[in-house]
Image 1: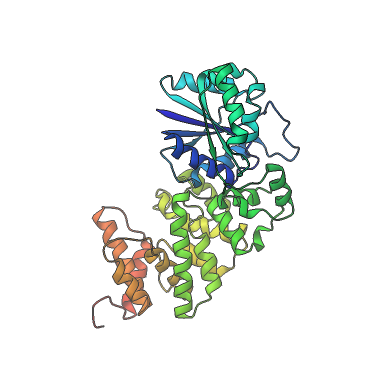
Image 2: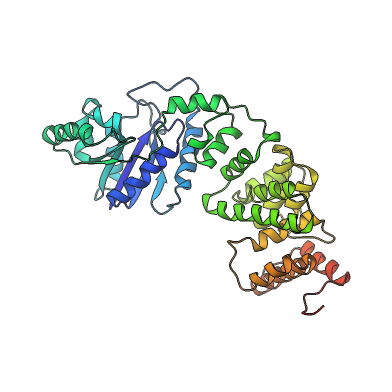
Length: 404
């Protein structure tokens, strides 16, 4: 088993860190890569505006998730849990104890590599791990790497491999923090990390969450979910806009509802119920037990009270899971966009897509009936509002039969 260890302050974690990690996984054939944020780096003091450890760990977790290699890339708080300076030698000893048979590789940038012999206890570091150093520019090439590689091999019998990544995002953490404080720098960050920074007012940011532009709103929404959910949310956003333009609804309201509709999808039952209590939502007995029914309600509340979205967006998100009788046009659009967005692939989805652009009420009825049938087949309880939606549509002459 090959394990890569990528440590640093990650203050904040950015696209350069992600690219280097991906390159190391590929070049070394790593089975696992551990991002390890340092608590107290031995070689420098953390700047005054450095977020608390829990925020840095959360940002690194979001960066790791954004790499979209869940069986390989992980985050460890091993150095944040330890008191005193975060000596790499001690970290490697702990990891070696945990994985005694593993081949360890320590990942680092050019500056760290060139001063490695000056670190605390370099003998232990180079005994326990090979070194993978990556350059950020063409200048960080063999001419710069070779002398240090040869020195480490001769003095410590070190295993060293070097990678030059000419397209790597070349920005210092200091520069990035300065940009963020001026409302810039978004392009250097994974969207979920940027959203987390905005939502927690880190690095001197003071975003007005109730008046965000679309890129910032997307970033905040993505920060609240797993990376694997993001393609679905993007699909719903774009499908909602297409449907809104086709049927004459407000495309911007549809877009913002699509961006936020699943923002609380990954909260557990306890967290969902706490939000329902916070926003005084009344829940029926089924909702109190089924977590899948709650994200639409809590997501609607976050959209309204955190992000300042209007009632139309609130209602569209609120009903996108169960539907209800007598839905508004925007409510129907978000319900159907969630059902038929391009990433959906199930039997009958093409019929739903066809109906969504020919007869929206027929599409809605077919969607509701499909949900009811699926729940019956799985012997799961059906929400009363879903049954009422079917009854209302049928009572108003809507049918899914051909030719009517």
